[in-house]
Image (cartoon, rainbow, N blue to C red; front, side, top):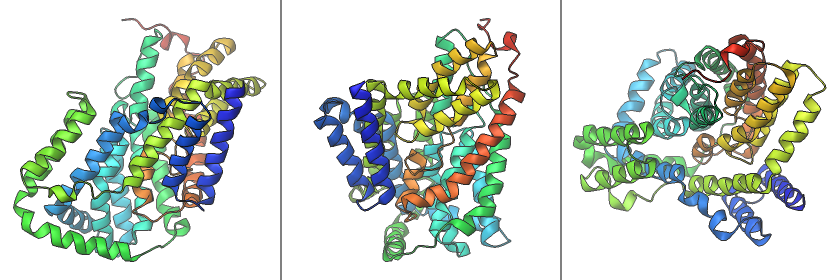
Length: 427
């Protein structure tokens, strides 16, 4: 119990420091890692294991490869093309970008989608006169929303599917999430379209102009290699996503090939926003501490007892809210895996369809909108010059809308009394 209290205290400290932003986020994240080691919650190997995680390495590789896409003029052309799709001004561009990202992220993990579209969004926003702070957060949120619609849209879906299969339940079907995920995504896009111009700040800086100037130095000599750069980027993306080769291998091979073929200047490989890598690696350590100490299971059990006083729909809502809350200090996958057994136990106790709760938990794990600690949000945090509170201002209403839609749509798609549809799978 002492370990649980200690970890929860560290989580509270982390959230407070992240919210106040008196210390840079990356410094706070590393301080939390050190605190976890000094208190003995994690060993040094465990604390730094996040930085060797395949996803973190792949994100670094994607950021480096987008430098190659920029250097060969791909991003400049794509941004201009996207801007031309919108003939109704900046808001039309924003809507077109979000819809395109939703479709793309339904088939490609949302973090990868955000990384791929980030430079395109910057170019397109410049062309239509939109500040990056008004574009990048909707981009990240749209990629997360799109990932809810399809099995391969996010690794969380795959993790939950594998866990269900391991428990003897039917794994998630390829398009099983679509009847619920797609309407939620479209509702989210409407809300983002209406609220983003109102609640998001306008922030600019010298760095934005410097970045444009640096791109126009680096791009001109390599325009002839644009097609090659796209091919290498797409190949690494596909091979890593479908699991043909490990994510880290696909990413690093892509970077190496871009350098060897002259698409990417080796001096620019490490010119990425390292805060993203530091934050993601550090948050993985905090998630591991939540899991190792039992803090996540403790919170889940407590919430299940509280929810037990209401009906099945209230229990479903509480499980989804708990998943969203746990996804702040933990990864989405870890949060889902912590709450999933609680949900299945609750379903058994209430004699309702366990798949209703399982699908609700899986979808709620993708509702990480209230803080920038989700990898897709971290990717845009620096380039968008956001503050921690900015995400709550737009992500708070989006989270409430998503949960409200899920509590209605999930029991409709997976009826609570349909035991035969969700029991032990017939192989």
